Image (cartoon, rainbow, N blue to C red; front, side, top):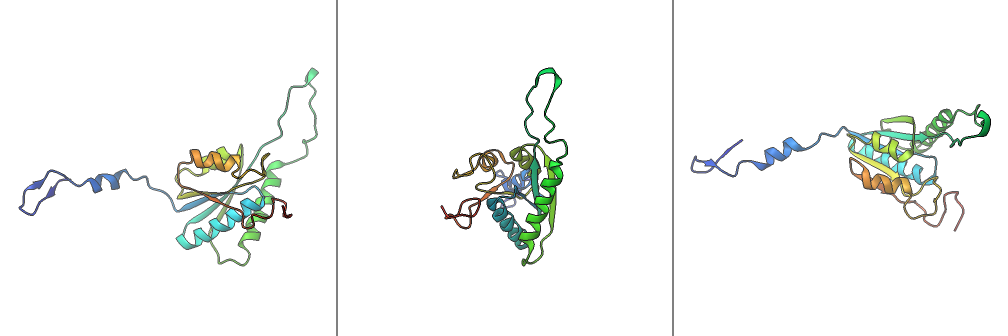
Amino acid sequence: MAQVGPDGAEDPRGREDDDMVNQVEEHDRRIVVGVDGSAGSRTALGWAMSQGRLTGATVEAVSAWQGPPVYGFAYGWSPSVFEDVDLAAITGKMLAEAVEDEAAGRPPAEILTRVVHGHPSQALLEAAHGAQMLVVGSRGHGAFAGMLLGSVSQHCVQHAPCPVVVVPPTDPERDEIGSRR
């Protein structure tokens, strides 16, 4: 779209702002938050719920589960230790409890929950497509829980399709199981 200058002639600069507006990717009003049951993820969930209430965004709490690694066994035998364990149901119960606990005493916000099969960082990145932001705790239930920034949060910061908020622990003097360091 060409602009007209004060003398009535066409302004050759045009309107770059119009072009920029047309290039902006439209985001839905959704905040994705990763929940693994750890204290850090619950703090992140609480932060996301507050932010959702303030901005009118829907909070989508996502938990991912994976089956235990299965290695090849001789003669077609494999262990049946996890046959009766429904990891998706266990993860869903943990997520529901975390949401219920964090929602208690807070003004209401629209919250959706989703349990997905897969690696947590990949599940969060997929859920974050089109979202306003992705919220994660700085540490969770990973193998390196004592690290400053967990592997899932680090991966999300580097690869997310939207802004990422990494919420630090509320009490840095406590570790993930609640005891003093």
